[in-house]
Amino acid sequence: MRCIVLLFGVGLGLAAQTGFRAEGRLVLVNAGVYDDRNRFHGELGVANFEVTDEGRAVRLESVGVEEVAISTVIVLDVSRSMGKHAAEAREALGYFLARARAGDEFCLLVFAEQMAEGCEFTGDAEGVRAEVARAVTGGGTALGDALLRGMGMVKRARNARRAILLISDGLDNSSAHSWKEVRRAALETDAVLYVVSLPLWRDRDAWQALRLQALAEESGGRMLTAGSAKELPAALDGLEVRQQYVLAFAPAAGAGRHAVRVRLRGEAARHLRVYWRHSYVLAGN
Image (cartoon, rainbow, N blue to C red; front, side):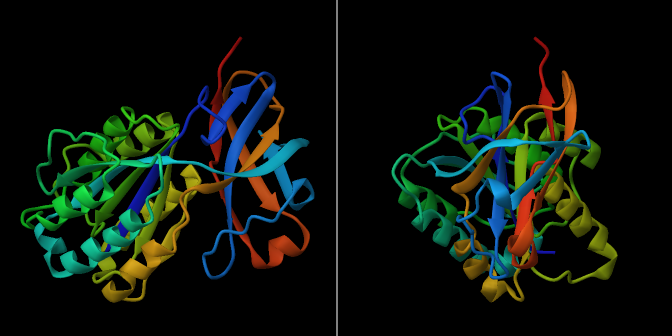
């Protein structure tokens, strides 16, 4: 499984561009809407969405689209299994960095069985690209450990919308932490996960791809598939990371973790797909 994983840090109490927050009596939830060519569709309104909170239908107070600067921790897999596709992974990352805009910032965290202690955020995308070119492959893959380290690093970001971009083969064979720990940490940090993958080279490893897909969709992200390593750069180049819908509604119940479901209505439901975070935590008064 070759994959590129993005996680966006979100949480209650942050600015409106984060995944969930409570503002007075309103909860704001981010949603991504895409067509069958994976292009963001930004022309919908209140009438196109249906939202339930804890199984109860809620009335949307507003729906809007926003585009903001992002802070991205790039977690680069340089393990032995990535060696064959290192050139494509670097090219794909180059496409991502080439789309940087004013206010964006990045830090690079390299890992295999071990990983760098940390990284500093910078707005110099070309400098990060040069650092990526110097990375040398070898060793096992501690993917779960790397995700946890990336979640810690992204807390230092300056922008309210935060991302972790993990470039990896998706096969974890060296992590000290369990996937249960990874999932719990992702939910606690309100991270949104995106996966861009190639077809599995061993069917027996399909469960690792499925758990990544499940976590991606639970967090509000999605899995994209590239047909070959050569298609990896184009897949990442087409991934929209800044534009999101913000859906505002009053919570249907009190404090605690809330399960949320978002559906599209009418014609939009027939040719578009929506992704949203499946739960949020509402603090007590």
